[in-house]
Image (cartoon, rainbow, N blue to C red; front, side):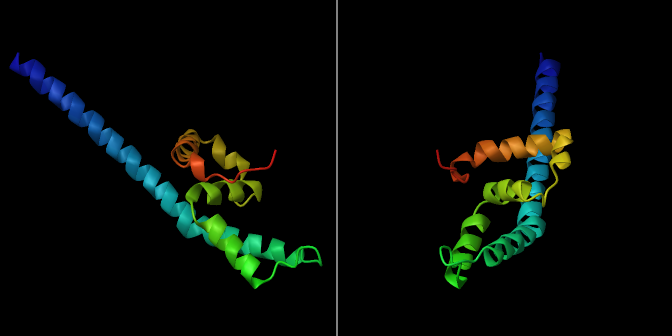
Length: 118
């Protein structure tokens, strides 16, 4: 009986260690989005806004700053905007690990996604 409990405890501890490793990998993914992708994305968005200036959409400094704050606020917005602007290539998602991270990010931060009108 004691051997069964020890084996069960080892299985549970092994599972918890495996989940901890997965969580650390996901956290590294989110850190990568914030540290590496976010500056590239915000620069690209700023360039888009500057290039699309006209009388109807003057895209002044306040608008650019507000847009930078909006897109930089949550990793899910960074991720989706980077995919849309091909800062993160679509082929990158073909890796199973990356799909898992992206799916978890979409599930965990789905309420912060950019809403498209319809």
